[in-house]
Length: 126
Image (cartoon, rainbow, N blue to C red; front, side):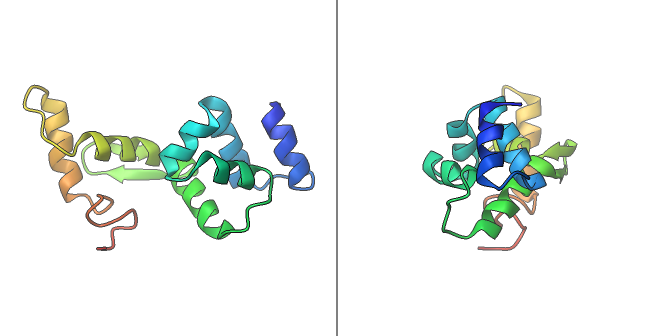
């Protein structure tokens, strides 16, 4: 059990919700800063969430953690992948790469995917 896990467990009165345990595990696997950047938040926001002192929309944070670290995405090109892998491909596939057939395939797939930046993470047009 990591120090971050114990500290978060204390802040959440001894029992972490499943999504918090997933957030702690993601931070332990890479870094809090990388997780924050990946999710589109600042490291300070993630710190506040881990310490159960965040005064913003905690339901939104929970939904994002579940989307990024707890559920899979049905990719039209790759099948079932994690949400963070999906985001990485969407970011990498913003321009076609004729020197790589796989990257070109992902460019085309990401352009039509309902989770693309054009449509937002839920497939709804912005």
